[in-house]
Length: 196
Image (cartoon, rainbow, N blue to C red; front, side, top):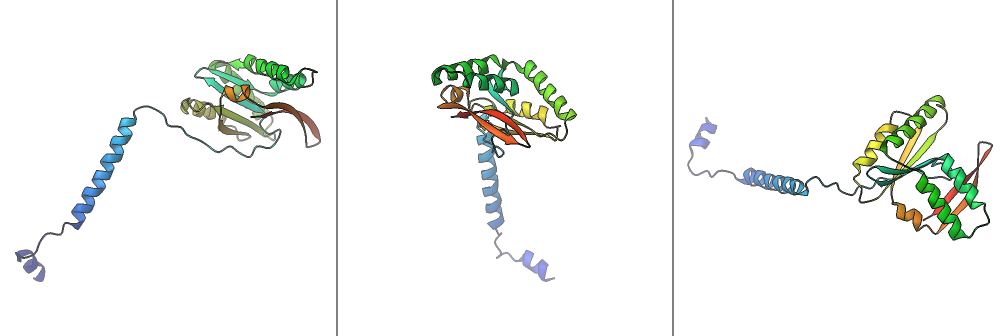
């Protein structure tokens, strides 16, 4: 009965606190959604952390050059670069020859798919061996391209991957290319170390 008397009492004013809170939340919602709508289809810069990089671990580096051109720097390219670094040339000549080797390793998306399929097949045949692929992407490239490459590598548990920002200009402006010998599991391997 008391509840009915309270409703019939004409002196009570409606409580507007929750209505004001609701209006504020709706205002924020529409401000955020209108900002997102105005951004359009442009992708924003996204940086991902790279896994621990120990010498000899990045067996393959994929440098994205543009939408349909990639440098695929695998063991064959590494071996050619090691051979160049052992020649009695000036540092500038060695660097230019290594950059030429890197440029010749250039491939399009179809060729990259083929190389990644071969890598996955090798990883399936050697399940105890760990592989590490580093994908370098220029800041101005859409990150969807990196995701496309990562999706091709995800189904192999022994293929690890990392992402880093960087362009071909980083290689061209590198201060040093050198050989580093790494001893792992009784085997010795010579790696090319690039000082950016």
